[in-house]
Length: 399
Image (cartoon, rainbow, N blue to C red; front, side):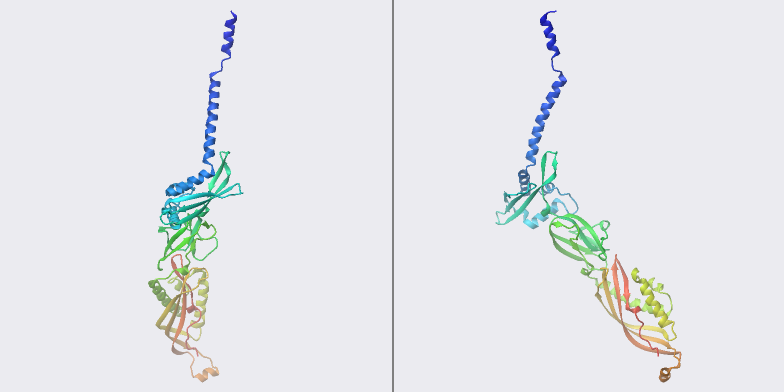
């Protein structure tokens, strides 16, 4: 074999394998791709670019794009449309035609602020905004600063509404779902809390409808902020007004209640007979039953006792009153005329002898008594909380 032939074989052995060539090519390509990606991301995460992109989106009046750029999550009261309504009310959004942008000097490496002045060329008005960018502690892809627009000034967070239980509630014409309501951790009367989520600042309208009450409608201005530990608005029972028909129903019920108490007591029937006809507040039943039993014992079963009561007139009025548990409360004050028959049984005392009244003699008298009955409204139901008809017995002749 010649020397040249041997050298040719040696050269063939030193040839680079195809797989190594491909690996080398992919390495170079990956390096180029990384450099392109790095410079692209470096440009995308530049704070000045983020701000200018925000301003351009703002001036384009594309609230859907602005909503997404600010990172809002869509919910019942947080939508591109409600954002637009808020911006229009607060800043006359649709009329803004120009802007100027200035960056503030900052010594905080994790915070950058910009002053943006929007102008309305046709009206000469301006709207000034301070836009804040905050650096997230988590870098993008472990390499790039992650700057985010601070949306604190744009939104009212974690909103909730306090409304009496049993009501139908509308916020900005949207009916709230009763299933979403919850009882507050700290008892606040007969209220339920409706979580609303995040909302945008501006004027909002509440409407509350409840059977037996006039509709309550009000508008209020909602500021930006965190409302996690407070309601944006609370509709207390005292804000509601009862309908005339419901007033008449309470008047009729108060009259019937007084009559029923005396009819049942004169028949010596238990208090349960009354509770079968009328709804009493559970917490007060035992107290009222004891008062009723005292009337029966002291004025019906006693030696000298009532035998008959006839109510001849009923003149009453209603007024809103205070309830410790915060529910709606109405007081019915009634002046009732009556005649009362009784049996007087006397002993042989000097007083009895002087009066000339024989033991077991029937007597009759007329009079009037003032009765107060308090009704509470809870969870869509009226109940009797108290009545002075059980405090003391009406006047009758005892001697």
